[in-house]
Image (tube, rainbow, N blue to C red):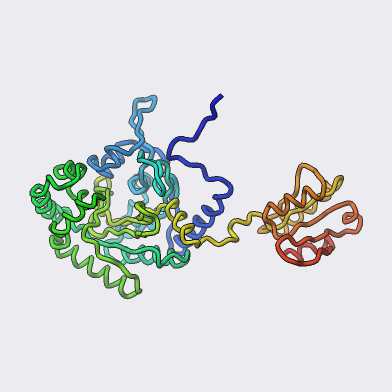
Length: 423
């Protein structure tokens, strides 16, 4: 029979790779919590209407990329393509945004997202994201805080020199409406020189033309009107205050007037952390303000900002820069080699050590075999030391200690002193 393969673009994480994920997940979640963010979890499947209304029906995600199907009750459901709309729905449904006068929600989440795209390095059909969403704060201080948070993460991971912060302001809906009119006029005057996708977007979603990856289109856009010239006064002040806060804490940034993001709900601040180390898939973290989304999905007007961070791309970047600590790949500290007939004593010893040293990664050999074969498995496990418990050791009340990574002589330690020795 033919072996069943995984779905294209939906990859396994093997035991050799999982330490990289565990390392990144631990560092990111610890940092989020240190800034006072609380974790929220929501389903991977939602009603399709949530994303059509939230993301925008004329976006590529909704039109081309969502995994959508009808269930047995003929209700249209979708595997979540991003986290923000789901987070807003969860907050509204659970009344987390009910008391907007006094309550601020600072939330984070982590999990799989799904988009039907052409799989390539750094772009999968099932991909994983960390996300942050903040509700109830209008000023640019929260915009600056989440950029400070991400900048600190890059420093903690040792990759700050490999990423660049790009920022822009999209202004209010009214400001964007005026800008769209000027942009459409410019694009129509150069329609024949645009790539096919950009031509199709002129009448449906002209801002997305600014995000075109076609080099000829990008060169033509150098003469296009700038969105920053159409900002309303309040958005302009918001953007200037954000830049001054970033300057105060020494966060470098580039103002990119063509940065618009691919989702309709963004307004005012948008940003991307990008790298040139991963080829075409250079965006590692991106987000912005979406002050109108809560109301758009049925809630009351609520200021909000957030971002998504791709875990696969972040791990790829860390590997490319050789920034992953070598010790994360060691999953065993101590390997217990067991003599024939000493299994019961070995179990007792392991239970004692695990109780007294809960953070010790201890693997007891199971399955029998000679001491020589067990020592080979001990070495392959990556453990620092092997403890040998044979009949002679049991009689003497000791264990033999063999160092697997250092040039030290083998010796014995009394069983009742082993906890102190390993601590």
